[in-house]
Length: 132
Image 1 (spheres, rainbow, N blue to C red):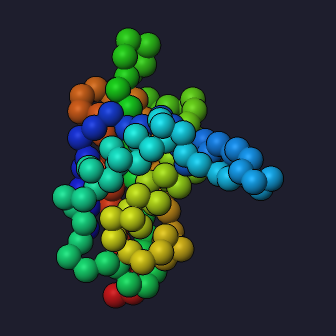
Image 2: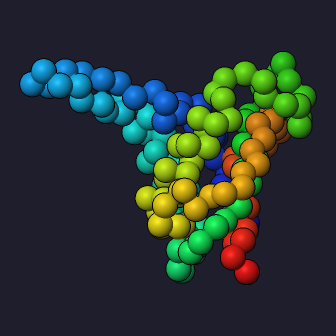
């Protein structure tokens, strides 16, 4: 399965957790920008949710296309933050929540790219069932 989500990709990541002490114990939480990014990704993912979750091993490919502005060329690699592994963590967490699979541990092969892009910006996703 493959699809494109036409959106400005979030630049905050799942790694931006905050911690506070509650009753002498650490309590981790997502700040508002991370919560907003999760809501945005989830809203764009839900229309593409498979009828049945993938079972077993899957490969995930994601191409993150960020709006380029004036300093970059279309297709040029984005070599600035956020890091690809942190972007993918946020994406996979949202895909798990949406029901693409039971657990993101099922993703056994990944490719990810970050590029600057003319319109449209967004995220191209391809999921391959490796159990076939």
